[in-house]
Length: 443
Image 1 (cartoon, rainbow, N blue to C red):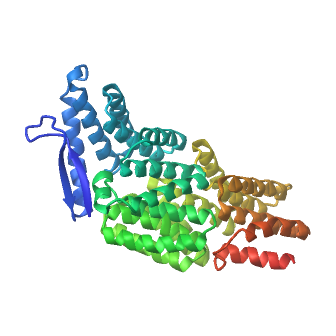
Image 2: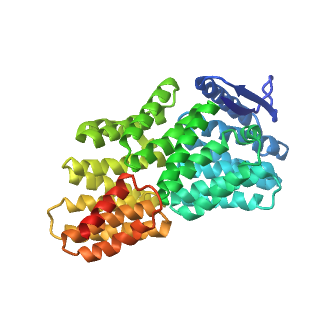
Image 3: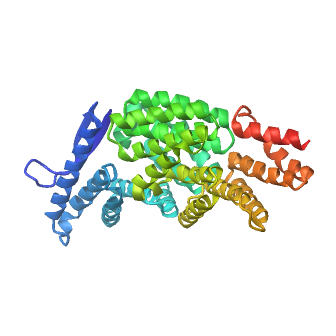
């Protein structure tokens, strides 16, 4: 395990920037302890400086950046990092310090992303990319494409996100692995691969996404970095296996993440793993895991609004409907849809609209089928706009099934067949099998 911290103090407590401490193969709790100590020492050093003295501006800029890093990667303090990065950027602009301007833009983009401000995160990402577009430094170019890919993926623009991911991977082939760790403080190759897998699945390249998942698990194990391995499992392996309908693989990856987060004190990922395990249990054996899924989301508190928890909210709503509690499911899906629309968190929006349509179909109210149909069509439109073929297939299948029940088989087949025909792989997965079975029935 490797980490890097910029210590912003000397033994006598005076600000001293540029002294670096590298930690190699140490337990995560020691790294978190060092982050905590770094944060306290930096805050003390900042309090000792006179904000009105121009001579201290450079030191305050460097200390603010160190505070931003320590808050962002510490435990439970990420929301406080934004102010430190704003100060860093203001001072970097005033001093025309390109290096710290880039650090601040990167930090602010991540901070806004973590707090659900996806459009603002994209604005900072674009400013970062614009700053480095003429650079001859490969890692700066990689960082620009990587942060754009992340923002665009969660906003829902999978086509553009894929373009940036492909550029990152092409450039990484020419960069030494150790150089990535030292400059970026995390493994760029592994983190890019798990985002690549997510985008591939959404675009309909299901088998390729699953192959990337397997390779990324091996890469994640090899680098022995606890937080990165959580992301490998929680951002890619678990959700992609689940969405592909392979509940055995999903259970296996979920158990792997649970064991990993029990060995390392990573609370939010542990709560997510508990919720995911409960979701898989529910899908396998009925409503047995619903209470545990509810509890995990409740225990996560405000953190349950992080992007990684969105799948659990949507699937909980769907499971409530399957368990006969469609009203509670509709209340949850409406709340989740409102959150996504307010935050421009678009990557899962088409599926939420489809889930709401399915929940509406269980209602006896007059006009429920018409409203459900409207949601399926909105889901289809959103999926097409985003280049998310997998969501498009789900929405088309739901709408075609409803049209079949209305004795409109020809219309249903005309809707579903062209979507199904655009797939070139993944024919053994649950969604494609369901679509094929429906097409056969329509004939």
